[in-house]
Image 1 (cartoon, rainbow, N blue to C red):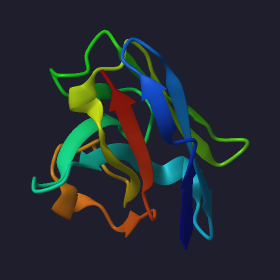
Image 2 (cartoon, rainbow, N blue to C red):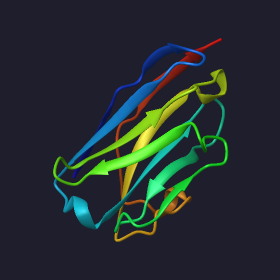
Image 3 (spheres, rainbow, N blue to C red):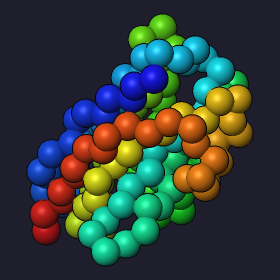
Image 4 (cartoon, rainbow, N blue to C red):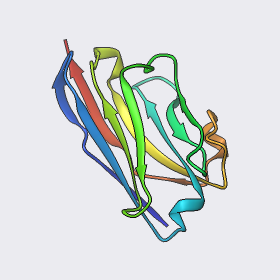
Length: 123
């Protein structure tokens, strides 16, 4: 199983980025998909997730209204559209997959992880 995250970069505050995570080696449609992030010196934190059925979507309070998670089962890809970025969004962003998962907030629930992509927001 491989999860390949991409799309990170350097952006000014107020700008936008779209992260992508391409999955291979798994039956994509039966996995909950999530995005987490980890800033230097901090624990990994939940950002957004889909339940495996796609029927439920969850966001951290800190990103509600600014970030949108989406998935394309035909392309085995999950996306994170990030708008109105703030310096506090600076972190390494990870995608994760949880077989028949509910879209958990807890990192330990996820079976597979991507390698991370750096997002840096300058003020």
